[in-house]
Length: 187
Image (spheres, rainbow, N blue to C red):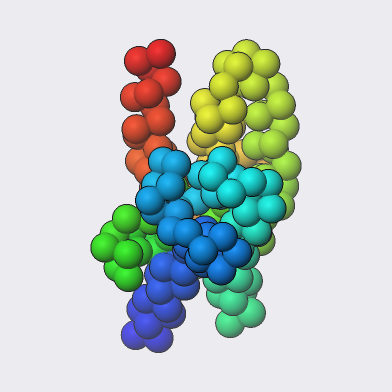
């Protein structure tokens, strides 16, 4: 029962959308009515500039990292930490306090994965550097390299439960980007 409450807590942590706070506090504007309307780092950067991008990225990445590290601190090793990452990403992407309209989860994923296994992040950064010149699209190269994370995790750990849960994490991330894939396909 304790784990259920902790997962709900992780979901609620995800409901804190850094871009909305940055927009209101620093720029006196609602990020949801600016640019694409998405409360994420990319839109914050486009609308408010580099400072807003960096603040939003760090804030959203910290959410992912903190819930994974909190799970570790409570003695949970391996796959349970990924359950917490799933919960915080669902909270970020589908926040109840914002009528289930949240961000896309990239920063939260990166922060959570950095806390869970930094080598996986190093691998997908390397994959991004290889894929970007091929795809010539930041979004496509980034999402493709992140989608390889379960393979990198399995290659590094040989842990099947962790790999399966990382596939769910990636499915949440990719599902949030369906409109990006449609836009890329149509161009």
